[in-house]
Image (cartoon, rainbow over all chains, first blue to last red; front, side, top):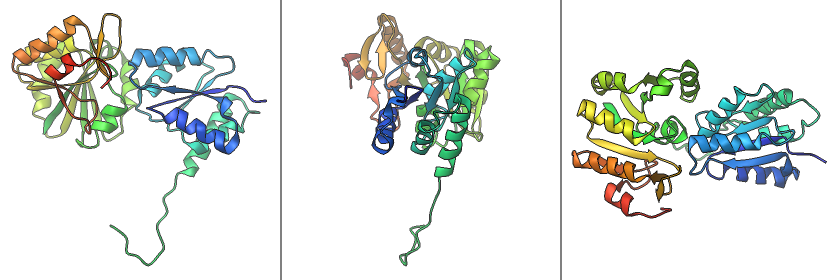
Length: 134
Length: 163
């Protein structure tokens, strides 16, 4: 039985959406707690994030944009707690890797998530006969 | 080129600013005007890490911003100036007399404020401060992202709640 281990925080419905994708693929959505910054001030984002990372065993924060207010809030919390990990630029591949790294410590699980998320980003060129748009 | 947007946003540098406005305006620099941030190396590092490497960020307190604004306005690059609150922007407008338009980008909930738009909450004093800006000939509009319709001050103040 898995437990809540991380907060996923981001713009609009990013967190709910990507966690729903984790649920569809792995059925392990309970690992993550979602947070949206929608219509919140920077101080309110920080306050809500602080509440969520006080949940027992939650020591990792995933955010979407490195420049986003959730990331800013998370970095403020990192200054207070040495046991917290922050992963920015989170994507589905990174979260799935994290789900299945529950035997690892938070730091290693976060690093593996980063590696997996980064390697999932790729660009492919079409190979058919139709001319390319550019 | 110079300053393309004078924005009031209590989140200061965040996604809407760096990506939402930064990309369509092809911004090359941000002037962040905030007394607390201007005197904290750690706060500056935090905000600097939020912008891409090709974008410069300058931190100014209110006094220095008033003194240096003409230089930023004459810059060949495209820039955006940010304050966290209406009072700071109004003081900057008064000190320089060269700001013609102000963008209300995000003023969020706090006790004493009433919600006017989804992203704009104002106290009676803040409403008066915006009216005073407009009375001095400065165009005040609310617009969180470039794709949204800019809303005139009269629209903002007559709105009630989520729009």
